[in-house]
Length: 510
Image (tube, rainbow, N blue to C red; front, side, top):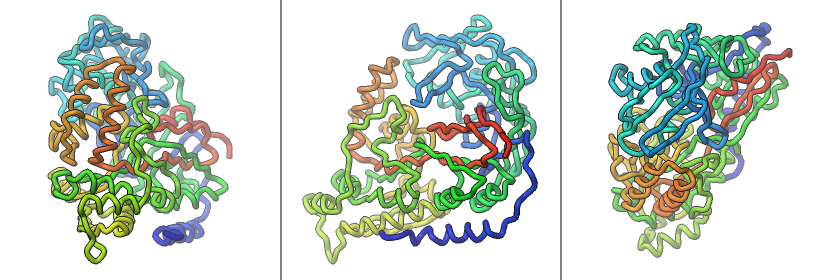
């Protein structure tokens, strides 16, 4: 592939639109304006599961635990914890923490938060994450005890950094409209499809935010987001611009671009119930036929990194030493020849790839079509509106598809959810219908083991199995890309792509 004919017009369109813009009025020195693609669906941390809800909730609410840059859990509201036995977790809550309305946060609030899920007081799909919790106890104001039905090593992850913010005792559905947390920002107002406004929590127990106010303004259109940044009416956009737009904005004197490795994974999945794709040799040949480097360069402008595992490299459980499939049409052709798939007039067999109507998945499918043609695989592309596309995927009515893992692949619990033989839809996300009894046994062992040093070899072996069997091909991890005005400083990127940078962001003079 030479040049970039697919994306060149987008660059030109953005450049022409920028030329028509005039300067806007001076921005508010006390308000940081961040553009988001859509409104959060629900700011009750027990209910909202979309990206905007979770990321904004993490500013309003505190979790029991936090996560570091290696995705390890660290203290949060819980200063410390111990695990006296595999089904008992004891947490020691910080003293002196207060909710935004002045009430003291104690163990009773923590217990209520989880009881409201476990006892069905709040209707939410999040309860499934705590399916192995038998009960939560609060023996005193600063101690919380989780009693499990069976060992569940992922519990700590499911108590950390956006997984479940703590709400005041007695909170029910009113938390949706008026969220009250203990985090570094307090809720001010929200208007669907327009904005969410937060203010600094002056009584925060930890390091206080530097900006007095943050306004999240909803801008669904990608080009308009870039234009708002260009004319100075917004300060920050995170992971919500095309790569071409980012390259254009890098040349703007009043803007800066920050980017670094992220954890969002693009992958290509196969239906293993299909008679052709059920042959592991076909899947391995496809892996050799895919030139990820070309797609990373031309589709993502190098704002992505090749992926060797579903776990990101930042994870403590990541295994870099798995079988890899370098781009080699020659090797792919040899594998298919040896497997007994001869070519007739240049075609060995046909496959169908389903995709959504969104531009990027369609581009990925088009490039894959070209690359597979070189090894005798005729790829037919079928495009559907996303709801129809996803319904077909979950029902198994497909041969191949491509999607992203966003957040769910940051903990080894993903191996059970996406690959265990008991997790076919609707019970999980094993949409490839992959069955391997050895993997099932390893997943069960990993879930029951609480010592990370003993869990790591288990997950190393799982990643090796998946890289050999290839129920899916891990393509690349997208970089986190933050474009911001020069009046905003101190916005460090987080691998998870959340909004933690707003906790340290500062507004300075132009």
